[in-house]
Amino acid sequence: MEQLSAGRKLDRAFEELGKKNRLSFELDVDADAATLKALDAKSDPAPGEEIPDEAAELISGAKITVTVESKKPLAESGEKDLVGTAMKVSTPDGDLAEYRVIGDYTYIRADMDAMGKVSGSPVPSADDLPPGAGPFKAVLEGKWVKFSTKEMDKAAAEGGEGDGGPAPAPSLDARTQKKLVQALREVVAREVRFKTAGGGDGTEHVTATAPFRTLVTELFGELRPLAKDLPPGMELPTDKDLKDAPNARVTADFTLRHGELSQVDVDLAKLAGTAKVKKLGLTLRLGEGTRPTAPAGATKLDLGDLMSGFLGGPPVDAAGIDTSGLDQDFPGEDF
Image 1 (cartoon, rainbow, N blue to C red):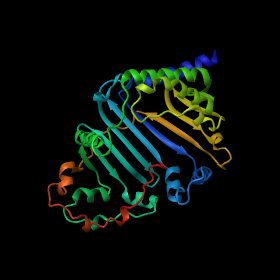
Image 2: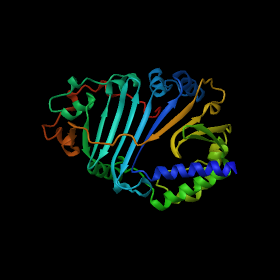
Image 3: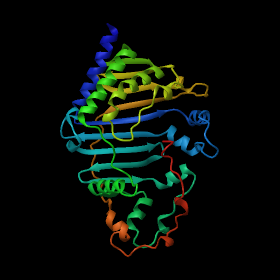
Image 4: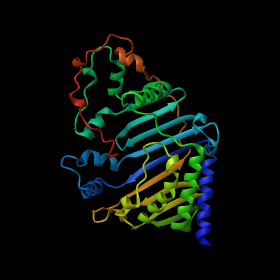
């Protein structure tokens, strides 16, 4: 009875999230840099591919915040109903990168100096750029820039069809999404064990525990019949691929306040195997967040003008730009 009651409470909490028009997620990595370095070493990286100390420090203190606002309740919304989307990567020292999609424009800014320090290779100074390179100068200075979302989507589509450029982001239709959710629910019902405990002041905790390898193996087993409906390139791992995954029992703690889901804490330390870890977990906080708005004073990037010479100016001689610091790998994969 407790299993059914706790699981049902969690179902209702997720249903309440779907009734909201605006929702914010904050993901926090609960691990120190030494733990991340130990996990990286255990993966036996190739010489020179080890995670840099600066990247480990950044990831250990990083938070990712995503906010979505729609004209309709989120559970009923499609892409055309969204009025604003925002994502921000922040650290204790400040914001690292941020983007927003508002109306017809996408807005982006990044702390390029911090990115350079993490990668171990400094970014060129904005003063090194030639006259007429205003938009790129704004990027290097960490200022807001904006571009037409439709133009970018069109350029991505043309690039994907032509010479191997990026293709539009894959998406799932509503029918397939419902099948995926149903598959997930069936696996959770079979493999996850729930318990509930009160916390006072309208707070309640629901803990969900499951063996990791069994859970993911069962989940992908349910998804394989749907593979034909998934976007191209989304390959599902086989049972053989997952056989070496740790089967330790992982616990997620869901915090409910007055029936609404406010936080999820997942302890992943048992998945570290023989790696020495102090703590390893993820924390997801949920709330309404701040309404995504268009930042003032953003510099406009026009894709066509940039290709012909920086917003209609004379073509820029690439030889005149110091690009020595751009030959680097930013920590996208590590992130």
